[in-house]
Image (cartoon, rainbow, N blue to C red; front, side, top):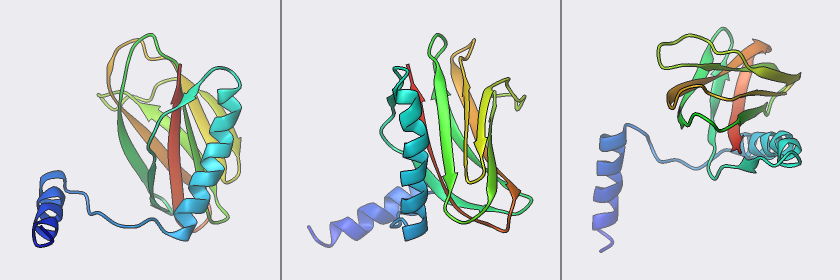
Length: 143
């Protein structure tokens, strides 16, 4: 059985293209901060979705996360950067057109909220507005 686990993990990486790795301390801190932002929306009846996306955002680049959303629901995407940086969150439809959102920006913390008119695939972008880059985490809430 022990010999099958490395084979399974290798197949998982090949099938999904995602490497399995532990989160860094900076990503854990960014997740805590992103959950703090998302907690404010919980007061308005939003439920925080299980799971999160962490990574690194570099200067003059952005990180994209693909999500499947449903018409009739409301969503808030909350992100935080671990290092001193100013970030922004944007949402794009499946054709790459930016959708209009409500925004919250507070330096290392940012959020974007909206209600999709159509169900489907959307892209959430975490952009580095100021700073050298570093770890970030994104969580989202829905109702």
